[in-house]
Length: 119
Image (cartoon, rainbow, N blue to C red; front, top):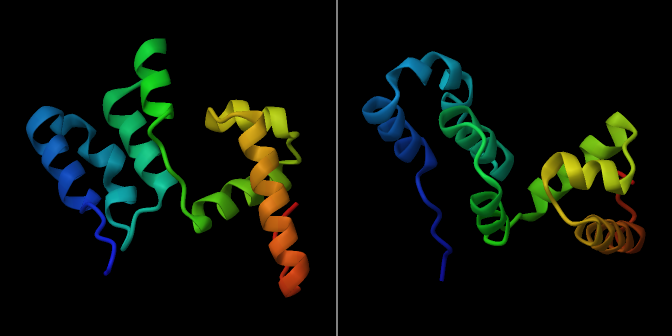
């Protein structure tokens, strides 16, 4: 059974056209991508709706899920910007424990397969 994903291009195009057409130009680059990553969706959401209050942020954070490619992009961002786990967690609004778990999981996979996955 194939996992279906929402059509984020259509969803965000509809939101922009109906609620805030003034932001269309600002979001054009992301909406023109062939496929949107989890990080792209988060960035679009922030550009359209702005920052949310603490209660909404906590609710949204508890319902986020990241696929392998998004996790690897986050870990690569950490390596390129020379961030600690705490700094990375704060930047992406994650738990430090989540970052540590991801690093341990993906570094152990890389060691067993021999791939170069960022530290």
